[in-house]
Length: 71
Image: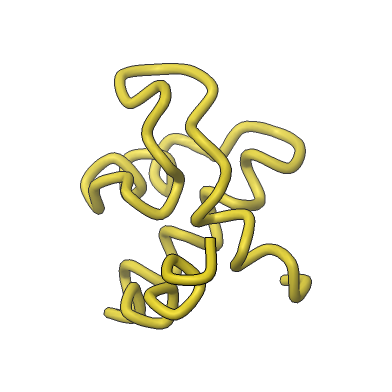
């Protein structure tokens, strides 16, 4: 994880799929878990989805709240 990654979670929209257009930070846990089981896409989007899944799985979504207020 790189420092700007957390900020990207609250500013980058999902570029494809069922939740296209929704912020990565707002994706539901079951969708993130599906990626964890089936495989994350390559590149930055996959890295960010994996990070968000880890935050969600460990109950750390609230860490993004201060970043949401800045955005």
